[in-house]
Amino acid sequence: MTRQPPSQVTDRTDGSTADASRINRRTLLTTIGVTAGALGIGSSTTAADVQPVTDVPGFSCGKRHFTCGREVAAADGMVSSVDPIASGVAATILRKGGNAVDAAVALQYTLNVTQPHGSGIGGGGFMVIYDAAADEITCVNSRERAPRGAEPDMFLDEDGDEIPFDQRHQSGDAVGVPGTLKGLETARKLYGSRPRQQLIGPAIKLARKGFTVDDFLAEQIAENWWKFNDAAKETFSTASGEPLGAGDRLVNADLADTLALIKRGGTDPFYEGEIAADLVETVRELGGTMTTDDMADYDITLDDPVRKDWYDVEIVGQPLPSSGPSVVAMALKMLEFCGIENHELRSPEMYHLVAEAITLAWADRMEYMGDPEFADVPIDGLLDDDYLAKRAGEIRMGDSVAANGCADPGVPPGVDSSGELSDSGGESGATTHFSVVDKHGNAVSYTSTIEQFMGSGKMVPGRGFMLNNELTDFDAEPGGPNEVQPWKRPLSSMSPTMVLNDGVPEFTAGSPGGWTIVSVTAQTLLYRYVYGLDPLESVVEPAIYTYHCSDVEWDSGVPERARETTAEWGHDWDDEASTLGNVQVIDIGEDELIGAADPNRDGQAVGFDRGGCR
Image (cartoon, rainbow, N blue to C red):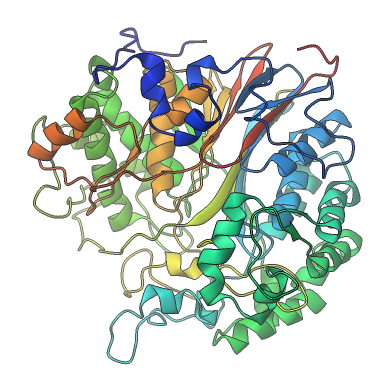
C-alpha cells in the first residue's frame, strides 16, 4: 500500500532524536516506560500499558486469542477505543462470530455504563460502515434533532444577548431528541448478525455488578458535580454522599433496568413508552419544549458518505450535518496543493501550513455549513479542486491569513457572493470515538456524543443515563445556516473517517474533542500518509488546533522554535500546552490489522486471532 508522496519526508527539525521527541506529546508514554517507536507490533505492550480487565466474562488480555495494548496487530479482528472494558466486550463479540457492526453495537452499549461522561443513549452520533460483501459505505446518522417547539432565539435573554454557556447548556432547551439507540438498532438490523439480547447483555451485567472508576471518570465526576441534578449525584456518589473517586465502584442499577427494558422491547420503550415519558418530563422540568410526539417521531437517516481524493487515496466520512470529514478533506487537500510534503516534520513551515489550511476551511464551515435538510449548503463547491487550489493560493509563507482578526470565507462555485461571517464561539465537547474491523474486511468508524462532559449534567431520574446538551451546537444568534430551527440537527465537528485505497478501506480514524476533532483527525492522517509514521506514531505526534478566529492551541512536543518563528508570522500561540483529542485508529492490511489507541486516556486496542498465534 502506498503510504507517502514520492518525497517521503520524515526528518524532524527540533534537534531531538526521533524516539525522544515522540515522548514529549503524551507524558503518559513516559510513565509507562516506552516510546511510540518502541511498542511491540503484534505483541502486548508493557504490563503497565495494558489495563487489566476483569469485568468481561470470557475476556482477558492474557488469553491466547487476544492481544492488548496501545498498538497491537492481529489477523482476525481489531478494536480500538477509549475504554479497555468496552474494547474487551467488542473483542469477545468478534471471537463469538459477530461481525464489526455487532462488535460496535455491543461496544457502544457498554460505553453507556463505563463512559457516562462522553456518550450514551441520551445523545447521538455518526456511524460510518463499510460492508465488504456489498463493497459499499453507508453512514448511519443518529444526530439529535431540535424539538418542534425550539425557536431561533431560545438561547438569547430578554435583552437579545447570548445566555452564558454555563447556564444555557444545563437548560431543557439545550437537550436534543436523542438518536444513539435508534442508530444502534438500525445498524444492527441492517448489517449485524447477532440478536440485540446478546449485544446488550454485557452492558446490563456491568451496570448491575459495577466496575472500578478510573482516574478520568473520577475527574469528570468531580469537575461536573456543580451541575448535576439529584439523580446524577446519587448515581455518582459514595454511600456517604461524596463524589466517587478513582478506585471506587460505580453501580448503576437504574441504567441496568433501562437497558433490560430495551433488551426486551427494542427501541419502543425508549421512544414511545415509559422511558420516553420520563425523559420528556425531565426535559420539560428544565424548561425545555420536548414532547412525547417528538420522541416518537424521531428516526435516523442513512446517508451517502462525503468523498474527496487526496494524493493517491480517498478520504471518506460522514456528510453534513457533521462538518468534520468535509472540513478535514478541505484542509488536507489545501495542504496537498501547498506541497506540504516538501517541508520537514515539526518545522515552522509545516505548522504554519497546517494552521492556515484549517483556518481557511473553518471560515468556510462557519459561513456555509448546516443541516442540509434546512440549509442550501454548497458542499460540491467547497470540495471542488479548483476552489481549494484557489484557497490554498491565499496561504503565504511568513504571513498568517488571520493575523489581524478572523479569516474571511471564500466564494465557492454555486455561490454568488459570500455573506456575513458567523462568529460563534467554540466549546470543548465530550464525545467518544472507536473503530472496529472484522476478519471479513467489514469496518466501522463511529463517533458518539452527549456534547459537554456529562452532557447537560442532568440524569433522567430512575433511568440512569445523562441527557445531552447538543442543541448548544447551534449558533446562539439567529441567522445563518446553523441557526436553531424546529426539528433541525445542529452542525457537528465529529469526524468518523475512513481512508480508501483502490476503493477499499485501509485506515480508520476519529476523535472526541468538540471543535478540536477536525484538527487532530486531519493531522493524524497527515502524519500517517505524508510523513509515513506508524499508526501509534501518527496518533501521538504533536498536534495543533485552531479555527477561523482562534489562537493556536498545541500539544506538548511542538518545538519552541516552531512556535517562536510562526509567532513572528502572525500566529498567536497559547502560553501553555494542551492535550488535544483522543484519537483511535486501525490500519487495515491485506493480512494484518494494526490498532492504535491514544495514550492520553486509558484507551486500548484489542486484536483477535482465531488461531491464537501472536
